[in-house]
Length: 287
Image (tube, rainbow, N blue to C red):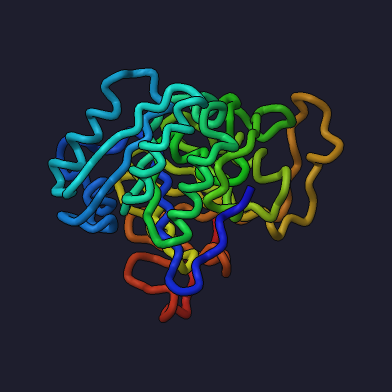
């Protein structure tokens, strides 16, 4: 499941994975930037709180986005696959200028939304230029391959991460969230070793990767985005590792991006805050 084809003219909308735990009280810079991208006072934002088990989640984000000046905010109370066929929900997405997927349980999210007309519409809206943001579980599910589970604070090893299909807004990355706070480097490295084509994005809490239509991401927030590029691996033991066996991964590139840093997902190069990818001649060296 990959991104929907682009319309004849125009750019794809921003894809905005957030690491969870974002500031919802003080500066709210991630939410503020999202509202601006959606049109500000002219925005029509649709919130999908399906991953959450809390009845208040949809209303909470309605308050947040309305308080930041969004013209219209609605949430879809989807709790079953049957709800995804509700024609009123489909019409609400038709009018959306921004879509926000909340946190919770990503397997609940994929089990209810996966393969539905609603998900197809979300991909098509993004291809038509509508920004789609997701936090925590809502971030993980954005990619074609989703990190569905696995233990933190572990070295890379066979069996330490579980993958499942996501909704396919992007097929270039695999995303993990609450990254530094839950010590998830080992499981992201393991996930990246399955297919080194994918770029691993480990996103800290209160941090977002704003991925533009040019496939350049910008980091916004108080933490970091860790980028794992396994495309230059010279050796991987993943293919013949036994369950629980530590992995050998040689030739990995790792970049850690703070606020304002950018990363070109096509060129696989990072840039410091003062430099723009189109103008930069001195890329950040990998760690």
